[in-house]
Length: 237
Image 1 (cartoon, helix red, strand yellow):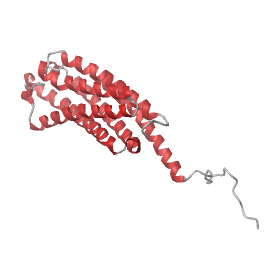
Image 2 (tube, one colour):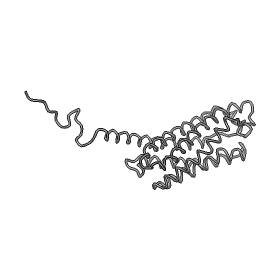
Image 3 (cartoon, helix red, strand yellow):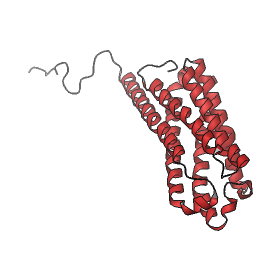
Image 4 (tube, rainbow, N blue to C red):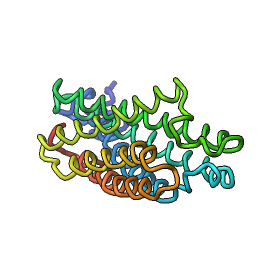
């Protein structure tokens, strides 16, 4: 009785010389790279679009266009959530290449992005409600309570600091322009988002100028980040 010997390439046969664990790891890495590239290409441009479409910031205009205000902030929050997923993927890809010295920058940028996501959610839900009964309080320091103040303060510290740290990290690994765009854009946008708003008041166009001027390079920085980490091989990984 002759034993049946499966032919090479038959179903169930493994490719000689390629360990199963290594193949699975490469597949996982490829999936993460695809995720990083996709989320970067979506999160950055969508963020810029929502900043450009941001409605007027004074209470009376917000009360008149509450639905649009809430919608644009919902889309901006989604873009930040997508960016956070992108950064989580970069963190996973760069664990070995960046080493322990790179972890603080990546974690700070990730946490700062999540906090800014919380700030936008708070802004989009709180201000339309306040605008209905006290429009003159909207986007002023008088409208901040303890909980809102904590969110605003934490986000305005960790968001720009995180992206500056990320910029320095990327610069050390040859991604100078990517880091510069993210760091510069994150800082300028954060200044426009809070400091310029409370400094010049909700009626001023200075806030919009700062936010768009920061969001544009920031969004392009994310596109470059996705291209760099979406390749089959990149420097840190």
